[in-house]
Amino acid sequence: MNFIKTIVAAGLVAASTSAFAADITGAGSSFIYPVLSKWADGYKKESGSAVNYQSIGSGAGIKQIQAKTVTFGATDKPLSVDQLEKDGLAQWPMIMGAIVAVVNIEGVKAGDMVLDGETLGKIYLGQITKWDDPAIKKLNPKLALPSDAIAVVHRADGSGTTFNFTDYLSKVSADWKSKVGSGATVEWPVGVGAKGNEGVSGNIGQTKNAIGYVEYAYAKQNKLTYAGLVNKAGKAVQPTTEAFQAAASNADWAHAPGYFLILTDQPGDKSWPIMASTFVLMHKDGADKAASAEAVKFFKWAFANGGKAAEELDYIAMPDSVIKLIEKTWSSDIKS
Image 1 (tube, rainbow, N blue to C red):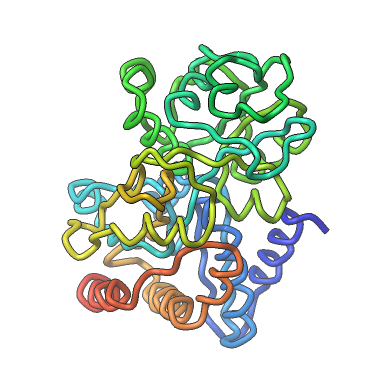
Image 2: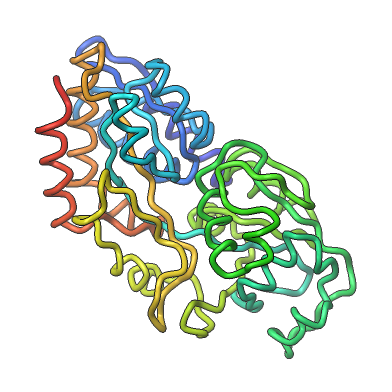
């Protein structure tokens, strides 16, 4: 069973209903879906409460929580303090993880290829169109690269993964910043779109000479070929837990209003350059107080019991000091 089917199966288990406990509905980020499915399955078994989560992209998740059709939304693009206040929402980071560039090139294995931000930006701008381009060959002098055209894949939906990926490109490429910029949706100069991290993963796996970007759990579990990246310190790094933790260690959540913090292009010799967080959104004064209370119980359970599942999927758990801040946010902001 491939990874996408596995996490959908876990989600379906989690979505089964119970007559004895409140059910929770959520929607949004596909970035968090692999670990959220595991958490939901564990919580269902322990508490009897079901978590029915739709992996539909951060943009759609924000719209659903704004429309009050779900108990919580999940987004990899945090909302500003002004937006939170306008919509009566509380926000907090739930997990941190990495975004990786993935390729499908015959003879190239995971970690063989190294790219830097400028080259990645030029590929997505359509300025580098073949795998044997001199810029790619300079970074990979020992790789036998084909002269085939690069098949560029990007997200088709409103995506927090896209927001963080394009935020990174905007920081490392002046050309990208001026011509495209960052956002959950952008006007892509080239490429084909796919829905969700799931869709991009599937497209890359089936398309020869393709390149795309996905949350690392999807790359790992679907055995996709990821590329190393040159970080802000000029060091070539591979997507490892050590590299993710090095980047995440720079996060100063305590001084981020509304927990608004972007983790791309962090300093440090060992830091992975494209990190992201998934943020949970809930109404401070939700219509269904029982569901709101159950959702907070679920997230508290996930912080306390979900570390192993997160680690197995190469996410970075929130530090205990940040969890204490989040628990204060629950107490002060969410009425249940």
